[in-house]
Length: 375
Length: 230
Image 1 (cartoon, rainbow over the protein chains, first blue to last red):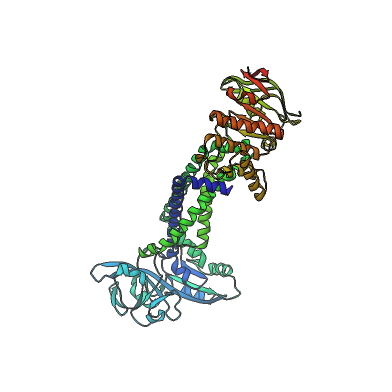
Image 2 (cartoon, each protein chain N blue to C red; image 1 turned 135 degrees about the horizontal axis):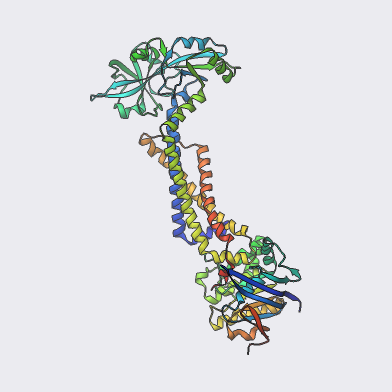
């Protein structure tokens, strides 16, 4: 029946092309919206996801990575000394102002990490070394910040919170969800740079669980011992951060709405075409029924049409999406294309096209035999 | 001559809102193998409804219908496609060919529905089209065929079903005399040589000589039965 469906599609080329365009439009939009959403979400938790360690200790009621509050630094030692902890590191995150070359200021996110271990620091360097921020007013700026901060060169000086610092490296792949440029410095310098947090406070403690210990068990024990802080596994804190941006800002709803609308557009486009085609061929289908074909035999032709539309539309959309990833990158946006996303969109495309065929199925079920006898 | 179709008190009543319309009323009929029967009558006399009942497309309101000894009226709706596949073929005035498929493919699709293996189906489809005189035009789309040729494809398709009963509704209705005659000659031949039971609903008096029996319908009833329309 695939052959019959294909021949019917090839016979009416203009209509088939329009249907295919409809599917491609809808599916490409789903790919783009899904990919950009995932890109944004990955960006929102990029530092958590790339920092080694299993446990994140944050201030009480911390909403996400970017807006966490300080808590007393001595708690770090409680974490470090807890049974089953292999290592622990303090991590400093705070907002600051950087002076622009042409005047004015720009808000930046300061990340202070231990340069000896590099934990919490950049994971991919374009120029320079992660450990080089030690012992001085040194900083690493991410490549993605150039658009906001201008063309920064290694060795250049910049003023952050009215303190002069020298750029000693350029990192790659550290883009914040808030779009504010991220500047990495040593933990100690970050504390001095953002004075209001104080020298006895930290923003995060990241800890690694020793081999043979359960992360969940350690978290449970730490929760008993430490008051005034929240303790998460790395995955839970990453998820919490992503959910914050998804739900609290309405970003998730907006993307979801566009995906739903694209899906419905696809259903309508394919549904209308297949329905029109079914109505046009109703006598032929009726004749097949009269000659002994069951409803199921006819449904196969209709579903085959829907399936072919879905498959062709999906493949074209996938190619378009792969090609457009670079365009998105050029505009500083991140679009994620992953195997599981592709499979999910394939499932959605099939659902979209096959569900749209159901209206036609109803029509076939109710074929009036009298139409067969009308000349 | 063995009996192919037997009806007793066959009745079909349509409900149009609160009004009941009797399209076929108490028809008693016996149609035999190897016989070509003409069903004549004015429009609205019930010819098409009777054809639909005989072809198991419509279910009767009351009465009985036996096909080759099997009672059909008591069967479930789901069993009817199987009955049609086994016993009945149709030929329609409007041909009802898939415009996207060639003459050969229009025949092949029925063979495939019957579950015939690809090579055999392919061979049979070609044989049938040669049989109806379309050996040169089997790979043409319906739009490139004349009315007579389209009707011959429809006949080949009906033959592909290999059913003992062929029901034809105005098969010459869209054809000129020469083409209409060709079509009727093929149907006549199928009855004589292959012992098929052929029932033709028609207005066309020019082809009356083909029929073994002529039934004249009026107001849903068989009013008259003749060997020839006088």
